[in-house]
Image 1 (cartoon, rainbow, N blue to C red):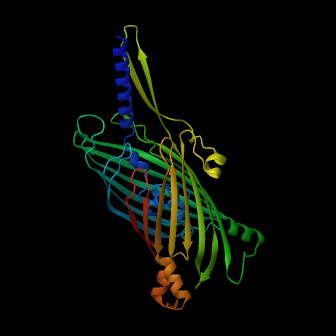
Image 2 (image 1 turned 90 degrees about the horizontal axis):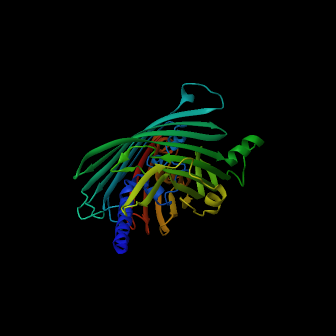
Image 3 (image 1 turned 90 degrees about the vertical axis):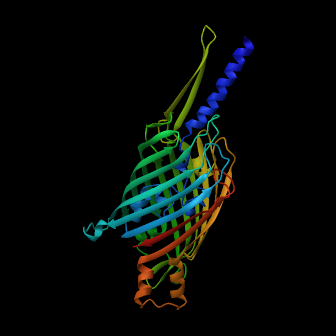
Length: 413
């Protein structure tokens, strides 16, 4: 009898592990598809970028982008994936993002305060091959499609502050079950402090090193909550996550034909990621010797229990908090070299790397060497209103090891 009871308890514990696998439904909702942010280990909650796919990580980025008139679109093509990582399955991923922003100062004079508002649309498509890990019958998972509308507002008065909100629809298709749809929300806030500009304004003199060469120093802090829905999918809540990030950027800049040109820049990013879904279980044996197990999935309260000095300054994980780290070197706004790492509780650390290229730096370089002349209308348009960006990334481990992610962005402002 004791052996039988032991076997029953062991079987129930195995079932508990399988149920927890199922409880991790839709983990890919927190995976960055942008070739830009993916190369940084996903540490993009405080990463200021005009790329619409970066705004998926933190909707507040749309608010900051809208401080100037902007239309931007980014596309990540269908990318085949193969993984042995828990809770993920093989298939393919693709993404599309479109952002529109407009500064209210163009129609409303607010003196020194600049205000911008924006709206965006994004669509993420995850197509999966059949997965058979939770029992003898295959799970004929077909696809997850996440579409959303983002609204953002940005304020600029010496420092820049952005707020963003995203409402999204999640459609889950499985050959074994009827199609399931639900809605969820994301929130984000972003504070960008251009330290060099603040000092120059307070002292009423520009900070110069030599000639027109100026130093640049930005400190950015961002916070985001993703997948706040309380809806249950196949017996589990969505993978809600909170993220707190810090970004330090230093560099040198000058002007070319009255347009800013960052000659060199270094960005160091830290991000703390907290899983806000609590998975608890209890095992009970009644007087008759029958054993039962109870599962409870619930959202944790608070903002992620982040420790600013430990998680962001030192960069150490702890408890339910994982750490993403990234750095980027920019050369003349033409070439960007990126690297990152991801450490999640219970999993081995893996690294990411990638690069990017932009026509913004190329045009400024050609004007600087007098191969293009700013008096030409096409050159003025390219200097003032147009940028084309390509980004590439790979990871050495994690959910999609050695899978290349690419994205192409067109930006008009």
